[in-house]
Length: 266
Length: 279
Image 1 (cartoon, chains in turn green, purple):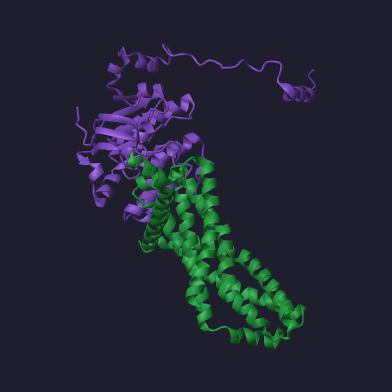
Image 2 (cartoon, chains in turn red, brown; image 1 turned 180 degrees about the vertical axis):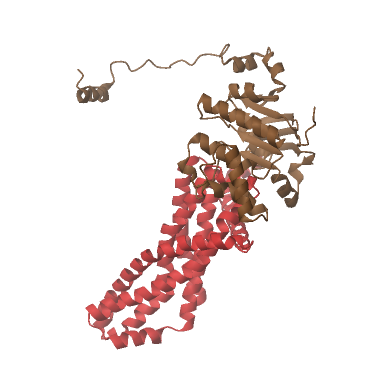
């Protein structure tokens, strides 16, 4: 009787906490195994190169567009705001710091979640429901090594490179609006960009990019890999639910991790 | 009679299911080495679930599975690797990797587990695909193949490592009767050619009658029969007779709980009549 009463009070909250901890533990183990399997033989190299092409190279145009428009908007907004106080000379400082420290890693990661992360979840999810992952297991090929580890390696490399590319394009976008359209001094703009940034800023931005890459890849691959145990949603509906869930969770986790990393790094 | 070296598979008090809930329980079965065992039963009787557990894709709820004397539930990782390399599986839809050409799908286990040169691998791949009648389809992707071709390709991949045991999950489902008969014939030839133990899960009675040395019938959450085909055909058990004769004697026919909509289908019908020009 007492047990029943206790379970009636504890169960709902306890279940949620228990399930969340269980999920987080599984996610962490999934990440550790995937990272360890990156180095499981030379055969991984070719698969990793293919993934770098898909995740990295094919995302260049999207990152360039987003970087350009973000930089242009920042250039315009900061110019108007700073020129009110006669401080438009600091335009380069504002654009450079906001991009390198915050906007480039966060926006690149969110864009890559939408472009590559969702595709990773869908690909692995479809492979799961069509028994392709079972087939790999039966052939004694570790599906995590074959499918997830190359994606993890590609994310670890591609995210920081694309973030750097975003930075460069965004600063050029800021110059385009701030200097070419609105008339700020070109020499001052670039000098401020150079002065404002020290190695710590660049390093911090790159650390963020690597962490976001790991988070996005882990969450997206995990959601696809376990799409079949999604209660109440089997088959194609399960894959679509997993993909939606992966994108939403990744975006939320990117922003939460950004806050934590910013607190720790600066 | 030549004795086969192919391993047998034995199940001891096995219960299988999902989420700790048993679909089939109390299974004490033997799939004899070098022979073809058909696991049959109605839809939802747990045939494919049993196969997944035998393949160790899911852990058993209780009981033991022996593969040639090895308890599969207590094998080390290395032992499991060795056992897996002695198995071949033909999945229901072939389960070919969609991103790889047919030749790369078949070559995958060889590339992963052998140190053969690429030319030798391609020789073996071409041989296996020729064996299943797909010698012309090396460069095709799985989505360019018909259902029957995908199954044949799945069979070629299952055979590429010369397995001792071949498992087939519903090999003839979705195929027309001629193609089903061809695939049955192909399975028989492969079994003789490779001297394998074969376990085929199906609800295709024609396939069962064409292939089976040994039959296991599942239903009602348990094993209803195990023995040879002749014994099964002579059975007097009403459930098995219904199953074998494809009748529904003693079972209530489904009844409509409400009358058909008839002429009065409301607005939808009237709109359709108008569109079709029928008054």
